[in-house]
Amino acid sequence: MNLTETNLFGVYVAPVSMLIIVVWVATIVLRRAADRFGLLRYVWHPPLFVFAVYVILLSSVVLLSTR
Image (cartoon, rainbow, N blue to C red; front, side, top):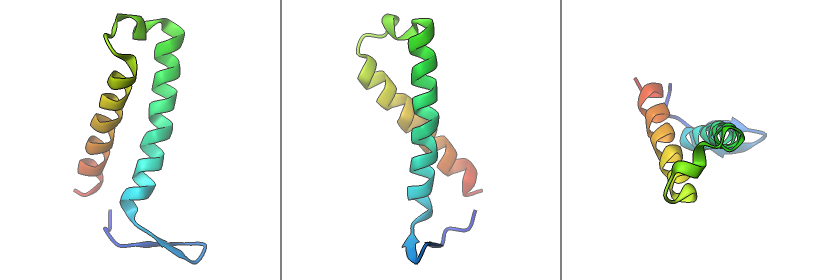
């Protein structure tokens, strides 16, 4: 991935901000799947767990996209 700004409807957007949105949507899908199957019952603090999953996904996507 080229780490330069992207012109989005006349506004220059950082590539990391687009990755943040993509990972946010993926986290929502994973959270709903975990709720549906009752997996978040076994976690001590579900919002903290979801945030940790988001950070792990975001860092993984950023590392994989910059190679």
